[in-house]
Image: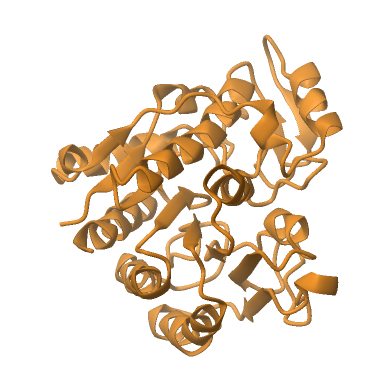
Length: 314
């Protein structure tokens, strides 16, 4: 079995956006409980995060935005950053630990302590733009990770595979003109945040390095797997990435309340196998998976368990 790393910190539970918010600490509690109940958690290599530094966060976010986050972080109560994104007293620490968690996972992968890793982090990140928070996201974890792979370890070509049901607008915009990062996204369309049309393909030197596959509501396991085999496989075979990062949202599950797709936990396993195979063929097996969405607790926990089991099989 592969040595699969697992990033988690109890302080991730300290991020709270208010009672009833779907992106709640219960999400990680459900994942941890499932991994413990199934006996999978002890088989994983625990990776303990430390907070990321501003030097790495500002590789993708503006200095002004980082200063704004620090200045607005509340000592009590909640501060609204956009219509559905807020910070509580523990949010800024959790966000820095989330970004730091993905960097610690990269260190473990590159030092060959693990072959791949899953980061059970929150807040999620793929909607966060260079200069503002949105869509439950404060710091764009996968974008920070891509730059870390490149600037800390000298990897040249990074592929980001975003299968969250919502388009990763922040990640796309950060690398839209950059051929050194290939961004692939499947997402329900039209749906929040409204970006991710098939005609959004990158700009300038980055043209052709953004590949969006907007999906109609109701798509399930068979249709998703066809997209991954028919579109993603040849794209990454041509691109030849040095590492693959997954924006692993599990909100395209048929039971998720925030969208209208019909993936199952088995479907997520099948998608994971495609990415794992591509990483083995082209990227030295280097897969970094970062939690994004997923709001039905039982579906999220089952899907994450299956996802990690496939990573663990390699």
